[in-house]
Image (cartoon, rainbow, N blue to C red; front, side):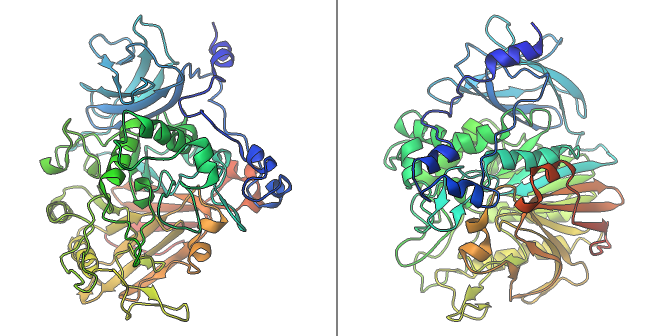
Amino acid sequence: MAAEGRFRAAARPPGPCDAGRLSRRALLRGGVGLGGAALLGALPGCREVDPLPPDPGWWPGEVAHLLGAAGAREALFKVSFRTPPRAPVLRVRGREGSAAPGQASDGGGRFHRFRLGGLEPDTAYELELVGAGGEPLCDPWTFRTFPAPDARPRRFRLLVYTCAGGSDLFVHPTRGFLFRPTGVRQRILRRGLSLAPDAVLAIGDHVYFDLRSRPGLAMGRSPQALLTAGRFRRDEPVLGGHNEQVLIRAFGPQIADLYATHFRSVPVFFVQDDHDFTENDEADARLRTFPPDRFMREVAAATRRLFYPEFPPTGLEPRAVLDGEGLAGPFAVLRVGRLFEALVADCRGHLTNARDPARRDRGSAFLPPGVEGWVIRRLQKSDALHGALVPSTPVLWTAGKWGEWYPDVQDPNGVLRADLDKPFWPRGWLEQHDRLLAAASARRDRMPLVVSGDLHATGAGRILRSGERDLRPNPVVSLLSGTPGSAGPMWPSAARGQRPVPSGVLDAEEWVPPVEENGFTLLEFTPEGLRAELYRWRPEQGLAALDTLEPFAVLELPRGRPAGPV
């Protein structure tokens, strides 16, 4: 049977995340939230937009979502199926002895993990998923491993973005939907994929389902969430029972539906941030959301286990950051031969801060001491031509949030200042920031680079000084990666009344002040330097504009001699 025929027969059954699902149109027609379907067309960018179908000519079979991460000699995949398969196997097509049996990740057998080893570096493979009897579960697809650690590739293209998560149903009482529809986000990311990246890096906030924080944006405890997903029970384990089904219904539409099978041939790497732990980073007399409690840590770990692959180990990570299967997660290396090395760091899962607000515990940090020491050593000793630090918490800019590197906070007049007492904020966070940036700047043979997300914006600049640390001999370049997901109420200027600005403790130059519009960043590394293309899109441009979207700013950054946008 032709692939298109199989597609027609198998594309429509509900997936593992479809239980209880509503559409935006059904939500508004029923009067939940904004109270009328007429508003659906009135809100910019919030009209009904159909999700993208599977690629024409490629049969997804029973596969609902498929994501892979590449190493030099192995590949990791996370797959969910519409119905539980029997003994699925991932293998290299036409190659004996290459089979990797699936490991079920959930209690229902719909989510599976595959670890395919014994591969050659920088090699394209045709992969296939088959059932217990050898029957195909979807069409084959191609996937390429990374170059060997000592190889010298001439080019590496990396698509970067942040905050791609969000439910189609979450609505602010007066400002409209919090997130772009899944169909809009998919079209933004499709444009990114059309630029032929070699890999994708998604920096934090892959899901939004806040349970205790942000009372004005009631996500996980909203009527829509309770109706479609249910209520978590914090005193029970996350996997294996009631909470597992709530998690699948709550997070599946935000990850599995968004990515589906569109990214099957491009390695995708995920860094987690605060919302991935079911909270916004907040602190007041009532609640401090971080450090995460047991439930929050289990949710973040379960989300990764079900939906997106871990980082394949490179041999450069300390053993302490690897899990029981030798895989990297919160702290990892993305290594592309001797051309590029990114040090990826989740700044939330192991965060420490003062228990006594009066102490201002100077030993507090986003990264554990052992991890910080490892990052500094890699920044100093890596033989890669380009290096990047990828923290989940932004560098250079602030919006006055509690969980930032910086002490900036709004005064009674709404002015952001760094010379006031920021409640519950420990100075140790900034001290760690300064140590990391000083280590990056000390390498005179390459440009110190930080790529981050979280702030729902696209921007670029460089840091000349932080406190007493003079970075002018080799300024630290910082990029905000852009978001495909946020809508009006989620922009910092709307949610906080404050656009992202450089922290008051820094001397910095803004090449591209943060832009609160949807988009992404494409980075191209070569031995000669880095080219960064910044993309943005506004709903008024229409969906058709996404097919030919061009960068609104381009930075040419020769290695060791950074320049501004051109």
